[in-house]
Length: 620
Image 1 (cartoon, rainbow, N blue to C red):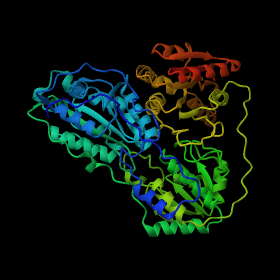
Image 2: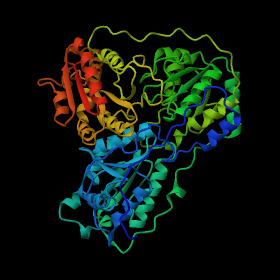
Image 3: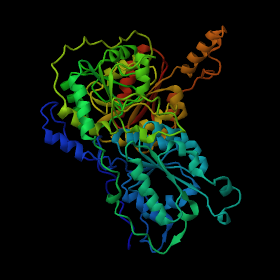
Image 4: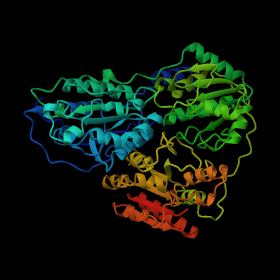
């Protein structure tokens, strides 16, 4: 190799989206092609439509043509060969060799480092990016201490089935090469054990060539359904080892994640037969991709079957929520009207629904499930003894261990159309009651963004799914996965990274606790010019826990008036707008009167439309 790999030009080119075909009129050949060609490699899906030059900051001066090489140069080369667009980092000495190689060997492009002020934010940014694009980027965390900081965000990505390549470092593993004190406390005998229970695979390679293969394998595994984070731990001494020549890079296209598994024909036929003969089918639309084509296929299947559809607040938008066949608002917990509808079903088609067993138990209780259940999910490949995020074990009469996107086209081609049924009378969204609460925030946002494409990157637990319709797969990208407070800011910034230049505005609606735990992610958005809007529903309390303490006090006949102790963030109250301004963002508020809310949200939307990052402190 005679020169440093070129680093200029576009960081990463998003692929164009093919406009969805009409909901009806698919030919069988077309449907077969959709199944066969649907590929889940990291290069296959980029639905955001963002511009090719998302970030243009932190450009290093040119380095001389290298005449000698280091182990970390080989590692950096593999990251570029894997087409990792960005590496969100919190810096640390354990991977100073890789840091130098990315800056001075690759020119800080493909991947470009994105500085984050906390390791949890770094992984959350990568998680948010994957939620929008269905594509993996990287995050680098320092030694054991950085990995400990990052564990919550890695767990969120695991539960959310989001691909993230987490790079760590340790050592030097050779004790004779360790500096006194500092290298010893930052070295562990099995660092990957910290996250092994909620990563798909981890490895600590022993040579530059082994490091390249480890990254190759980690990317392949992370991008294979069901997707999730992987962890590669790089020995500091290995990074800083001088090598005679760079290893020959593997031909990466021969090591990509496999195409989506397609269902066995007999199982597809069995599922299609149940659905065709059903009198009252219901579709549970859960974990699905952000693909517009797959969105259209789900709508076409529901319309052909005249099946009622339920969606979930925990996962991203999977079906238009104002469609006549959408039967209940998407909520975090399975609502009573959805359970009533499900109990009336004779066939249930579950498209990778999160906690299918819980939905069935909520509906039938201790009784036998009377409906036939068609379960479409590859998720059992992730189930293990450490984390219980797999939920209860659901019954299934037909079990297709595939991604929904690979199954729906075949079902659409095979099922018999049912006569159109009378749509239910639409339920109006809850009215604005004149109180400064989360409902008022939703109504103010809807008015301020009218006519704009918006991506809700996060919503609070108190959100009512009827407050804003979802009509596109990027209208809402779902919750954080593992219930980890503090993820909202980083995920919003990662989504903003993916959406920059797309014309779609990222909006994170966060609680005050969520914002405060991850607030420094705002700096990353400002520094890398990633416009996004944060609406902070600030009740100055960890109020969900106040509700829990009230319940316990009532059960024990103790004073509920004490529920606030250890929960309220008052005396002094936090000035969230000032925290935003301190990081270079626009800070509006605190908004304390409902008559000021609409003006504040309109101002925030206008600022973000002009390329700014804005945080609005709303005292709900």
